[in-house]
Length: 238
Ligand SMILES: C[S@@+](CC[C@H](N)C(=O)[O-])C[C@H]1O[C@@H](n2cnc3c(N)ncnc32)[C@H](O)[C@@H]1O
Ligand SMILES: O=C(O)C(=O)C[C@]1(C(=O)O)C=C[C@@H](O)C=C1
Image 1 (cartoon, rainbow, N blue to C red):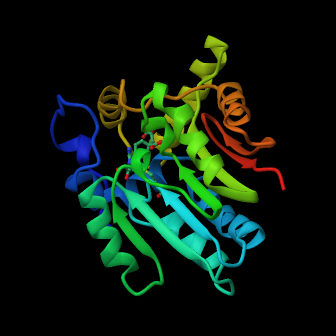
Image 2 (image 1 turned 90 degrees about the vertical axis):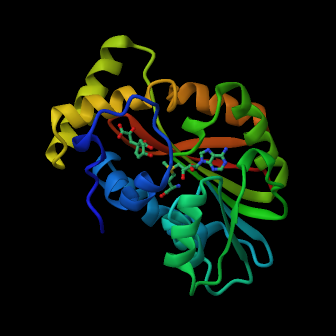
Image 3 (image 1 turned 180 degrees about the vertical axis):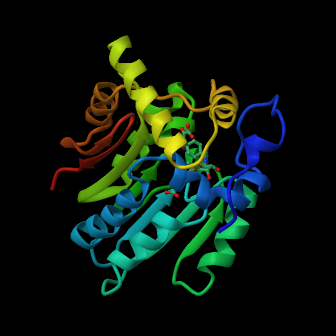
Protein backbone atom coordinates (compact mmCIF):
# COMPACT_ATOMS: atom_id res chain seq x y z
CA UNK A 1 0.00 0.00 0.00
CA UNK A 2 1.48 3.35 -1.04
CA UNK A 3 1.75 5.88 1.82
CA UNK A 4 -0.20 9.14 1.58
CA UNK A 5 2.38 11.95 1.46
CA UNK A 6 0.31 14.29 -0.74
CA UNK A 7 0.22 17.22 1.67
CA UNK A 8 3.89 16.90 2.73
CA UNK A 9 5.25 17.55 -0.72
CA UNK A 10 3.84 20.87 -1.85
CA UNK A 11 1.17 23.47 -1.28
CA UNK A 12 -2.02 22.59 -3.10
CA UNK A 13 -3.74 25.79 -4.00
CA UNK A 14 -6.77 24.12 -5.56
CA UNK A 15 -9.47 22.08 -3.83
CA UNK A 16 -9.36 18.37 -3.07
CA UNK A 17 -10.15 16.10 -6.06
CA UNK A 18 -10.12 12.36 -6.63
CA UNK A 19 -7.35 12.48 -9.22
CA UNK A 20 -4.62 9.95 -9.96
CA UNK A 21 -2.38 11.14 -7.09
CA UNK A 22 -5.17 10.64 -4.57
CA UNK A 23 -6.26 7.34 -6.13
CA UNK A 24 -2.69 5.97 -5.88
CA UNK A 25 -2.59 6.46 -2.08
CA UNK A 26 -6.31 6.32 -1.29
CA UNK A 27 -6.32 3.11 0.76
CA UNK A 28 -3.68 4.46 3.12
CA UNK A 29 -5.31 7.92 3.18
CA UNK A 30 -8.77 6.77 4.17
CA UNK A 31 -7.53 4.24 6.75
CA UNK A 32 -5.38 6.90 8.48
CA UNK A 33 -8.03 9.66 8.15
CA UNK A 34 -11.39 8.11 8.98
CA UNK A 35 -11.87 6.67 12.48
CA UNK A 36 -13.81 3.41 12.18
CA UNK A 37 -13.35 3.02 8.42
CA UNK A 38 -12.32 -0.66 8.71
CA UNK A 39 -15.33 -1.30 10.94
CA UNK A 40 -17.74 0.25 8.43
CA UNK A 41 -16.41 -2.20 5.82
CA UNK A 42 -16.90 -5.17 8.18
CA UNK A 43 -20.47 -4.06 8.83
CA UNK A 44 -21.22 -3.52 5.12
CA UNK A 45 -20.37 -7.23 4.72
CA UNK A 46 -22.54 -8.21 7.69
CA UNK A 47 -25.46 -6.01 6.59
CA UNK A 48 -25.16 -7.32 3.04
CA UNK A 49 -25.42 -10.85 4.42
CA UNK A 50 -28.44 -9.82 6.47
CA UNK A 51 -30.36 -7.84 3.82
CA UNK A 52 -29.24 -8.92 0.30
CA UNK A 53 -32.26 -10.44 -1.43
CA UNK A 54 -31.98 -13.23 -3.97
CA UNK A 55 -32.09 -11.89 -7.55
CA UNK A 56 -31.56 -8.25 -6.54
CA UNK A 57 -28.91 -5.62 -7.27
CA UNK A 58 -26.42 -4.33 -4.68
CA UNK A 59 -24.96 -0.88 -5.40
CA UNK A 60 -21.83 0.78 -4.06
CA UNK A 61 -22.21 4.46 -5.05
CA UNK A 62 -18.86 6.31 -5.04
CA UNK A 63 -16.94 3.05 -4.77
CA UNK A 64 -13.37 4.48 -5.09
CA UNK A 65 -11.03 1.43 -5.01
CA UNK A 66 -13.90 -0.96 -4.28
CA UNK A 67 -13.36 -1.79 -0.61
CA UNK A 68 -17.09 -1.60 0.23
CA UNK A 69 -17.99 -3.18 -3.15
CA UNK A 70 -15.95 -6.23 -2.18
CA UNK A 71 -17.65 -6.27 1.24
CA UNK A 72 -21.06 -6.32 -0.54
CA UNK A 73 -19.89 -9.25 -2.71
CA UNK A 74 -18.48 -11.19 0.27
CA UNK A 75 -21.68 -10.74 2.26
CA UNK A 76 -23.89 -12.05 -0.55
CA UNK A 77 -21.82 -14.89 -2.04
CA UNK A 78 -24.48 -17.58 -1.79
CA UNK A 79 -27.18 -15.37 -3.34
CA UNK A 80 -27.88 -14.54 -6.98
CA UNK A 81 -27.10 -10.82 -6.72
CA UNK A 82 -25.48 -8.38 -9.14
CA UNK A 83 -22.90 -6.25 -7.32
CA UNK A 84 -22.42 -2.88 -9.03
CA UNK A 85 -19.77 -0.25 -8.16
CA UNK A 86 -20.07 3.30 -9.53
CA UNK A 87 -17.55 6.15 -9.42
CA UNK A 88 -17.09 9.22 -11.63
CA UNK A 89 -13.30 9.34 -11.10
CA UNK A 90 -11.60 7.49 -13.98
CA UNK A 91 -8.42 7.24 -11.86
CA UNK A 92 -10.36 5.44 -9.10
CA UNK A 93 -12.34 3.12 -11.40
CA UNK A 94 -9.23 2.12 -13.41
CA UNK A 95 -7.41 1.12 -10.20
CA UNK A 96 -10.55 -0.51 -8.86
CA UNK A 97 -10.76 -2.68 -12.02
CA UNK A 98 -7.17 -3.81 -11.43
CA UNK A 99 -7.87 -4.67 -7.79
CA UNK A 100 -11.26 -6.39 -8.29
CA UNK A 101 -10.77 -7.73 -11.83
CA UNK A 102 -11.15 -11.37 -10.75
CA UNK A 103 -14.36 -10.75 -8.75
CA UNK A 104 -17.95 -11.07 -10.01
CA UNK A 105 -18.51 -7.30 -9.77
CA UNK A 106 -19.66 -4.73 -12.39
CA UNK A 107 -17.85 -1.37 -12.35
CA UNK A 108 -18.96 1.79 -14.15
CA UNK A 109 -17.33 5.20 -14.46
CA UNK A 110 -20.35 7.49 -14.17
CA UNK A 111 -22.06 10.12 -12.04
CA UNK A 112 -24.13 8.56 -9.26
CA UNK A 113 -26.67 11.36 -9.77
CA UNK A 114 -27.30 9.99 -13.29
CA UNK A 115 -27.23 6.30 -12.32
CA UNK A 116 -30.54 4.43 -12.43
CA UNK A 117 -31.06 2.46 -9.21
CA UNK A 118 -33.37 -0.48 -9.78
CA UNK A 119 -34.31 -3.79 -8.20
CA UNK A 120 -31.93 -3.02 -5.30
CA UNK A 121 -31.84 -4.60 -1.85
CA UNK A 122 -28.66 -2.98 -0.46
CA UNK A 123 -27.22 0.41 -1.47
CA UNK A 124 -24.01 1.83 0.05
CA UNK A 125 -22.97 5.50 0.23
CA UNK A 126 -19.73 5.19 2.23
CA UNK A 127 -18.36 8.72 2.81
CA UNK A 128 -19.75 9.96 -0.53
CA UNK A 129 -22.91 12.07 0.10
CA UNK A 130 -20.62 14.60 1.84
CA UNK A 131 -19.12 15.41 -1.60
CA UNK A 132 -22.51 15.91 -3.32
CA UNK A 133 -23.89 19.48 -3.49
CA UNK A 134 -26.33 19.97 -0.61
CA UNK A 135 -29.20 20.86 -2.95
CA UNK A 136 -28.79 17.53 -4.79
CA UNK A 137 -28.69 15.26 -1.74
CA UNK A 138 -32.47 14.89 -1.33
CA UNK A 139 -32.98 13.93 -4.96
CA UNK A 140 -30.26 11.25 -4.71
CA UNK A 141 -31.70 9.67 -1.55
CA UNK A 142 -35.15 9.71 -3.10
CA UNK A 143 -33.90 7.90 -6.23
CA UNK A 144 -32.23 5.31 -3.99
CA UNK A 145 -35.36 4.74 -1.91
CA UNK A 146 -37.50 4.42 -5.05
CA UNK A 147 -35.04 1.90 -6.54
CA UNK A 148 -34.99 -0.31 -3.43
CA UNK A 149 -37.22 -3.34 -3.05
CA UNK A 150 -39.47 -3.43 0.04
CA UNK A 151 -37.30 -4.33 3.04
CA UNK A 152 -34.15 -3.05 1.30
CA UNK A 153 -31.58 -0.81 3.00
CA UNK A 154 -29.28 2.13 2.45
CA UNK A 155 -26.02 2.23 4.44
CA UNK A 156 -24.99 5.87 4.74
CA UNK A 157 -21.59 6.75 6.26
CA UNK A 158 -20.61 10.40 6.62
CA UNK A 159 -18.29 12.91 8.19
CA UNK A 160 -20.72 14.89 10.36
CA UNK A 161 -20.99 18.30 11.99
CA UNK A 162 -22.62 19.21 15.30
CA UNK A 163 -25.18 21.99 15.89
CA UNK A 164 -23.47 23.01 19.16
CA UNK A 165 -20.29 24.93 18.17
CA UNK A 166 -18.40 23.77 21.28
CA UNK A 167 -19.13 20.11 20.57
CA UNK A 168 -18.29 20.66 16.90
CA UNK A 169 -14.89 22.11 17.82
CA UNK A 170 -14.18 19.27 20.30
CA UNK A 171 -15.03 16.52 17.78
CA UNK A 172 -12.85 18.16 15.10
CA UNK A 173 -9.98 18.37 17.62
CA UNK A 174 -10.39 14.68 18.47
CA UNK A 175 -10.42 13.77 14.77
CA UNK A 176 -7.24 15.76 14.24
CA UNK A 177 -5.65 13.97 17.23
CA UNK A 178 -6.59 10.69 15.47
CA UNK A 179 -4.82 11.89 12.33
CA UNK A 180 -1.71 12.92 14.30
CA UNK A 181 -1.69 9.51 16.01
CA UNK A 182 -1.66 7.97 12.51
CA UNK A 183 1.42 9.93 11.45
CA UNK A 184 0.05 13.08 9.81
CA UNK A 185 1.86 16.32 10.74
CA UNK A 186 0.15 19.60 11.70
CA UNK A 187 1.10 20.99 8.29
CA UNK A 188 -0.45 18.05 6.41
CA UNK A 189 -3.60 18.27 8.54
CA UNK A 190 -4.00 21.99 7.98
CA UNK A 191 -3.28 21.83 4.23
CA UNK A 192 -5.85 19.06 3.76
CA UNK A 193 -8.37 20.98 5.90
CA UNK A 194 -8.01 23.91 3.48
CA UNK A 195 -8.25 21.66 0.41
CA UNK A 196 -11.48 20.08 1.71
CA UNK A 197 -13.19 23.44 2.43
CA UNK A 198 -16.35 23.81 0.31
CA UNK A 199 -15.61 20.36 -1.22
CA UNK A 200 -16.57 18.07 1.67
CA UNK A 201 -19.63 19.57 3.39
CA UNK A 202 -20.60 17.71 6.58
CA UNK A 203 -24.08 18.02 8.09
CA UNK A 204 -25.53 17.07 11.51
CA UNK A 205 -26.99 13.60 12.09
CA UNK A 206 -30.44 15.17 12.61
CA UNK A 207 -30.34 16.61 9.06
CA UNK A 208 -29.44 13.18 7.63
CA UNK A 209 -32.22 11.38 9.49
CA UNK A 210 -34.80 14.01 8.44
CA UNK A 211 -33.70 13.77 4.81
CA UNK A 212 -33.90 9.95 4.92
CA UNK A 213 -37.46 10.18 6.30
CA UNK A 214 -38.39 12.74 3.60
CA UNK A 215 -36.93 10.42 0.94
CA UNK A 216 -39.42 7.72 1.96
CA UNK A 217 -37.45 5.44 4.30
CA UNK A 218 -39.67 4.08 7.07
CA UNK A 219 -36.87 4.26 9.66
CA UNK A 220 -33.22 5.21 10.00
CA UNK A 221 -30.76 4.39 12.77
CA UNK A 222 -27.26 5.51 13.71
CA UNK A 223 -25.31 2.28 14.23
CA UNK A 224 -21.83 3.82 14.52
CA UNK A 225 -20.18 7.04 15.59
CA UNK A 226 -16.56 7.87 16.41
CA UNK A 227 -15.82 11.59 16.79
CA UNK A 228 -17.16 13.37 13.68
CA UNK A 229 -17.68 10.21 11.61
CA UNK A 230 -20.86 8.21 11.65
CA UNK A 231 -22.74 5.49 9.83
CA UNK A 232 -26.50 5.05 9.51
CA UNK A 233 -28.80 2.37 8.18
CA UNK A 234 -32.09 3.40 6.55
CA UNK A 235 -34.78 0.80 5.88
CA UNK A 236 -37.53 0.79 3.25
CA UNK A 237 -40.78 -0.61 4.58
CA UNK A 238 -41.76 -4.18 3.64
C1 LIG B 1 -14.33 9.15 0.20
S1 LIG B 1 -14.44 8.39 -1.32
C2 LIG B 1 -15.48 6.96 -1.01
C3 LIG B 1 -14.81 5.81 -0.32
C4 LIG B 1 -15.39 4.47 -0.65
N1 LIG B 1 -16.83 4.47 -0.69
C5 LIG B 1 -14.89 3.44 0.33
O1 LIG B 1 -15.68 2.97 1.17
O2 LIG B 1 -13.70 3.10 0.26
C6 LIG B 1 -15.57 9.33 -2.28
C7 LIG B 1 -15.72 8.80 -3.70
O3 LIG B 1 -16.92 9.32 -4.26
C8 LIG B 1 -16.68 9.58 -5.62
N2 LIG B 1 -17.69 10.56 -6.07
C9 LIG B 1 -17.90 11.81 -5.59
N3 LIG B 1 -18.94 12.39 -6.25
C10 LIG B 1 -19.39 11.48 -7.15
C11 LIG B 1 -20.42 11.48 -8.13
N4 LIG B 1 -21.22 12.54 -8.31
N5 LIG B 1 -20.60 10.37 -8.88
C12 LIG B 1 -19.80 9.29 -8.72
N6 LIG B 1 -18.81 9.22 -7.81
C13 LIG B 1 -18.60 10.31 -7.04
C14 LIG B 1 -15.25 10.11 -5.68
O4 LIG B 1 -14.70 10.01 -6.97
C15 LIG B 1 -14.58 9.21 -4.64
O5 LIG B 1 -14.00 8.09 -5.25
O1 LIG C 1 -9.02 13.69 6.07
C1 LIG C 1 -10.06 14.21 6.44
O2 LIG C 1 -10.05 15.22 7.14
C2 LIG C 1 -11.34 13.65 6.06
O3 LIG C 1 -12.34 14.28 6.16
C3 LIG C 1 -11.34 12.27 5.59
C4 LIG C 1 -11.77 11.99 4.18
C5 LIG C 1 -13.26 11.64 4.06
O4 LIG C 1 -14.01 11.69 5.02
O5 LIG C 1 -13.69 11.32 2.93
C6 LIG C 1 -11.53 13.09 3.25
C7 LIG C 1 -11.08 12.89 1.99
C8 LIG C 1 -10.69 11.55 1.51
O6 LIG C 1 -11.77 11.08 0.75
C9 LIG C 1 -10.50 10.58 2.59
C10 LIG C 1 -11.00 10.79 3.82
